[in-house]
Image 1: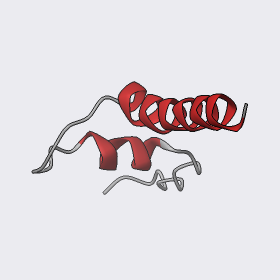
Image 2: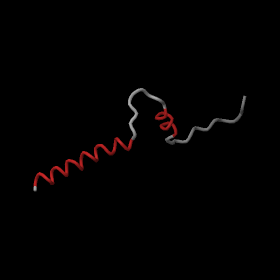
Image 3: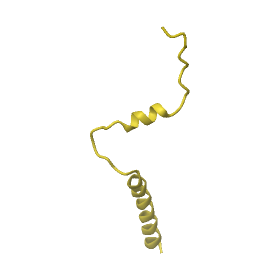
Image 4: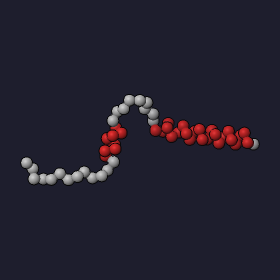
Length: 54
């Protein structure tokens, strides 16, 4: 038996990284697309508002 005590692991995001690396079922969408779609809709909405109100 070892006399060395195991120290607690430091608090880090290592566990979260392992959690999100797991393969799951469903759609896989690039985060750039997820961010660009709402931004594009906002820009289109502003453009429509500017052209219709003048």
